[in-house]
Length: 415
Image: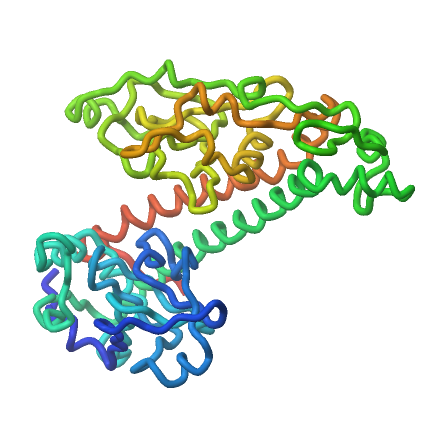
């Protein structure tokens, strides 16, 4: 199917550009998102490591602000990444990115969003990078990026399909964030603040807790090296409650990796992605980076909750709970623990398995550990279900998109 190709710049009614200017920031205020917040696996920008600006700066400093439906387009560092601005827009944008406003008379906005995300256009953008150290796609080159513009009906079909699938994936992502927040709050209450013990110590029944579970908790504390802990609980270390699968890892060469990787996802330490291990894990596991560069600023380890069959590289510990402690309990504990003291190495900080096993852990009574697993289990089961559904939807979306753009498949709108 022959379609007209129009320069990207000619399809826009406005460009909000604050590049080249460092915005004054504040301790609190409106979020200022940077390029790290824009990812092609998200519908809307993420709020990750955001800074803030005052209301006065928001009102007077910027050349302009994104509006709902604008596309937030990264120009430097990771050129071509694009997300849609939600309604309402609750942020402002930093340098190295622009907000482009599609001209709805010339192009269906959701189609432009899908088109910019397509592998074909992403490849075009990559060939247009300038800069050797930091890739840069100049705004002045927007008119050199030629985009295929089919009939309006086809634009709407492709754009709506891409957007609706992306919106469902985004809904699942937000639901998962809420479910994990609930699980973290439960963990904090049960095992950090000991709220349920303190409530019973005061002579009252723990709120929102069934009688059978409440009965499991003691009504007094005892001394430990970590301070007061519930009676009959004890201080131990991670080695007692974690099963480690590091010995199963066998590095593969690049060619072997591509030949044997198959359909299964690949996980590993964020900064080291050179090798995939010759082992296919099965079950529910938690990954923790071995390289110190994947430790968060607050000292907690970067962890990833994974399940099913997957590959893992040799710079991540693969962990599963044991001894009555479920993997989800282990995950929540580590996400609440500063492990900086257990990391060694000045040039390349590392968390070796021996040190990892020494991380402190408070072992509750067996019945309480079992009750906690039963409480958070359904939350994480829903997280897994939502994630699996999103992967399926993303697969459908990303498989269909390149076939629809050149007209390889005949489609019609469903009313």
